[in-house]
Length: 330
Image 1 (cartoon, rainbow, N blue to C red):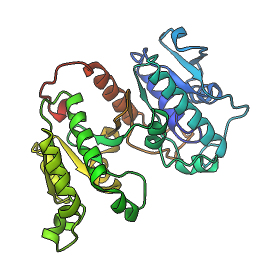
Image 2: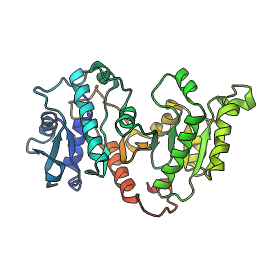
Image 3: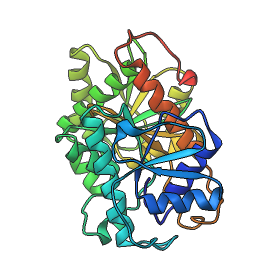
Image 4: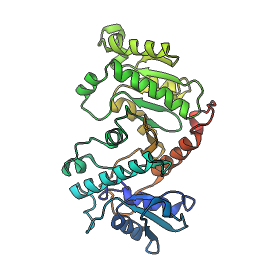
C-alpha cells in the first residue's frame, strides 16, 4: 500500500476501482487505511479483509486487503509520520514473505517515504535495501525502464561522494550481470549492455579522472569474457540518446541521478522501477509519495498501472524462451 500519509493507498484504490480486470491482485497493507482510501474515491466501494491469500475472491468492485498492520486511527495525510513509516515497512515485509513462499507471483509496491522510515527507527534508504535484506541478502540492483530506454544502477541511495567509493569492480560486475539478466528476462536473446562512464566524457583518457581506466573498463572486459555483450565506458551525456535510438538494450549507470533523470524526463507515468536479482518479480511506479497532493483526490495511478503491467509481463515470461522484443513493446 505504500506510505499511508502519501498517495500510495489512493493510487492503489483508484487503480482497482478504474481497472476491474485487475481481479487477480490483493493489497497488503492496513485495512483502516485502505478502507478510507476507497471511501474517498467511491462511497459505494467495498473492502474485504483477508485472513489468508488463498481466501481471495477477486470479485468486481471488491478491494481485498491482507492485513500487515492494525492502526487504531488514521495517520495524518501529507506529512512525515512515524506510524506511517512503520505501517509501510510492515506491508513490505509481509509481501516479501508471501513472494518468497510462492503464495503470490510478484510484488508491485506503492511509494514509501525515507524520512518516515527514519522517524520509525528503520534505517533503510528505500525499498531496494529492504528487499535485499529480507529476500536473503541477495545482490540486487535497481532498473528504471520505460518504453524507450532501460537503465540499471551501479549505486543507488547514497551521497555522490559515497557512490564514487562504492562503484568498485565488484559493484560494476554485479550491475552488468544483472543488466544482462534483465534483458534476458524481458525476452532479449543477446542483450546489448552499454556501461556509462563516471566522469565527463568517460574520463577523456584519464584527463578528467581515471575510474574508467582502473575500474570500469576492466569490468567490461571481464563481463565480455563471460559472454556478455557489454561495451563502453560511454560518455554519460550521450549514451542514453544512443540507447533511445536502438543501439543498446540496457544502460548501466554509475549513480542514481545519472540513470534516473533520462527515464523520468520522458514522463513519470511511463517509468517503472524493477528490482533485479531477487527470487521473485518486484516493480513499482517511478514517483514518490507526493505529500503535496495526498488526500486531495488528484493522484494519477498511471505509473502504478504501468508497473502492474510490467510485473505481469515479467512473470509471464519467466521460463519462456528468449526472443528479441524491442523496448517499445514492453
